[in-house]
Image 1 (cartoon, rainbow, N blue to C red):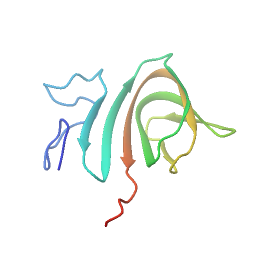
Image 2: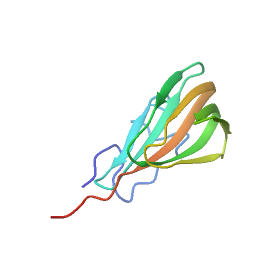
Image 3: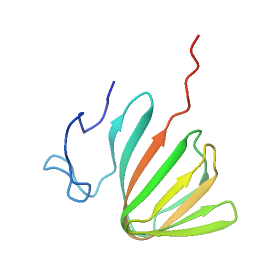
Amino acid sequence: MSYGHVKSGDRINLQTLREELDVDNTYALVKTDQMEVIRMALHKGKVVEQHSIDSEISVLCLKGEILFHIDTTAETLTKDDWLYLKEAQPFSYSVKEDTILLVTIVFGRQESN
């Protein structure tokens, strides 16, 4: 089951995307029962207050600069930096320059009956 803008086997460039996708927008590229992959375009000055997600998260900075606050730690991500957040890990961020992130959310295991 796949929802999003990319189909299995599609090749895209995460910087330039495709003609039908606007490079300045955020897209759920793929969403399945097990994961969601999002290309996030964030503009300088955007601030997101502390929150958490009940899933593991992988964040790859493709372009720009963003400051993540995780517990009492601050981590700056720039091009090619990668960050892992465990399940339910509180975090916030502020965008220092226009930034593109590739965010992968891995959903928890579903219990079978």
